[in-house]
Structure formats: structure tokens, C-alpha cells
Image (cartoon, rainbow, N blue to C red):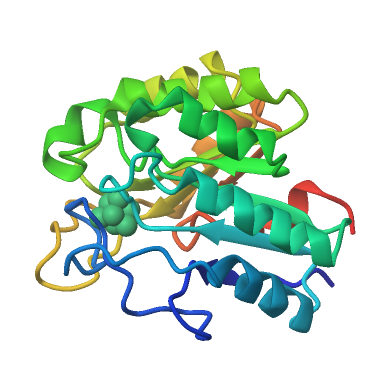
Length: 244
Ligand code: SF4
């Protein structure tokens, strides 16, 4: 059986770092905003050691958004990919990256490290960006996925969204077509759940049958994989794109 673990780029030996602090403030997210801390040079090595100890064959590496860093943390991603692969050349690596503020060089740094999957979540439909992702830009995120594919044609690209934030069906379908227009391979669709009373309200709980409709539609328009259901999250069954 494939094993899945989600690792945040931790400051210490904890795999799940509750102290991660983001430079952005998305309305759905409960990550802290205590101000960014300096990068930890030892982190790539420790992530690699954790993957080795856990005997993972598929690893998802992610970070908060680091708009304070000139490269948005791209080099740190690349160092972590290289460290993990140095322990196990066969391991599959997915990176869930921020938009690097559209910095093409930063994205190239990550793509050149040859992760197997570059994931960047659109999170929601275009109209809701000012309220839900105020520091992000829908087109910029789409362009990241497009450029990731252009820079390294061997990797898969992936994105994910949450439903229940006030989007319409037509808007979801439009988003799915936008993702296919940039050759996005994999799509995850899940139900938004409010982490605490400080985050955006749930506007709607989507019927399971509607998730199934999106899954069928996604497959019909060319996604290689669509994971769509109320409990689906960005890393849900991530390794299933590969045979182990
Ligand atoms: S950029 Fe990511 S980590 Fe930061 S607030 Fe938004 S969703 Fe949370």
C-alpha cells in the first residue's frame, strides 16, 4: 500500500509544524500571521530524513507563502527536493507551491529540480478572489501552472479548489476549462469547512452528487485524474497517479 504523509517545511524536528507563519491572509485559512522567520538551512535534510524513516514512496512538500523572500522560497523547495531524492532516487515528489508573485525565475528553480508533480491550488473561482484570496491573482495562478508545464514537460501539474464559498456551477465549470486550457493534469475538488469563527462562512454544503458531476465532467474534458468529493483535500490519494 502506498503511504501518504503531508510535511510542512518545519522549523524543527516536528513533521507537522503548528508555528508556520504566512505572509498572506486568505479568508479560508487558519495559518498564523506572526511574521516570517528566517529559513532553516537544516530543514531540507530533516525532511529527507523523515521521508526515509517513514519509508515513503510518495511525498508532498509544501510551504506557506513567503512573499518576504526574493525568490519566494523557491531555492529552499529545490534544496528539499534534492535532499529527499538523494536518499531515495525512486521516490515520487509532489510540491504544493505558492505563486511566487509570478516570478518566472523562482518557478524555474523549482521545475529544474524535477519534482514529479507541481501543484498550485486555485482554491476558488475567479470572482471570489478579492474576498477569499485578496493577495492572489487568478490569472497569475493559472499562468504558473502553464509555465510549470512549459519548463518541464515530464512533470504533472495539479490544482485544487474548495466548494461552498458562494460559487455557481457555471463558474466552477469555467474554472475547470481554464485549467484544461493550461494543460493542468490533475484536479482536486472538496467541500470548504470553516476552520474557526475567524474564517469565511460556509455559504453552502454541496450535495455529493454534484461532486460526482464535476468528476465526470473533468474526466470528459481531459484531466488525467479528478478527485471530487466532500472530504477531498489537496493531497487526497495524491500517489494514485502512479503505480507503486
Ligand atoms: S497563502 Fe496559503 S498558507 Fe498563506 S494564508 Fe493563503 S492558504 Fe494560508
